Amino acid sequence: MIKTKDTRRARLRRARRVRARIPINPERPRLSVFRSSEHIYAQVIDDSSHRTLATASTLDPAFRQSTEHLPKAAQAAKVGELLAQRVLALGISKVTFDRGGFIYHGRVQALAEAARSAGLSF
Image (cartoon, rainbow, N blue to C red; front, side, top):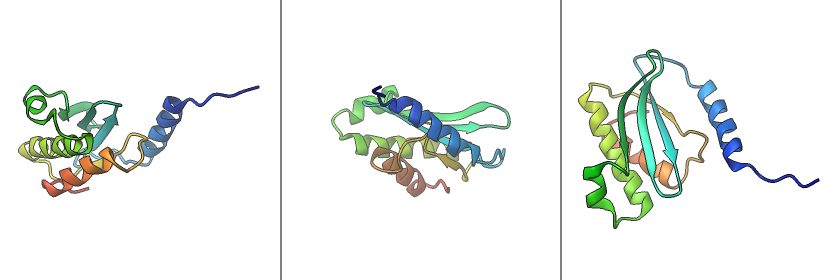
């Protein structure tokens, strides 16, 4: 019998494993990242109250016009900076990073490092 790879199911299994190790702390919300083949999305979530505090993605209208010509890693870095600005405006400086089952490499790493350099600590 031939078994086919189900990469989405494997990524979701990894994501559950990562989230199980992240403590729920209202003072330190979770920065969650999702990467599709074309776009990258990031949001800061308060798991204690089940609310999304801030979001940023490559689909934001103002963001999209100025960065369409950039490579995907550079776009991810811009999303990280934009999210950090929005979160810092809310008075939050410490977050917990949730890579969402993706490898900490490439676009996910670029987003995380840009958010760190913009002032978030995790």
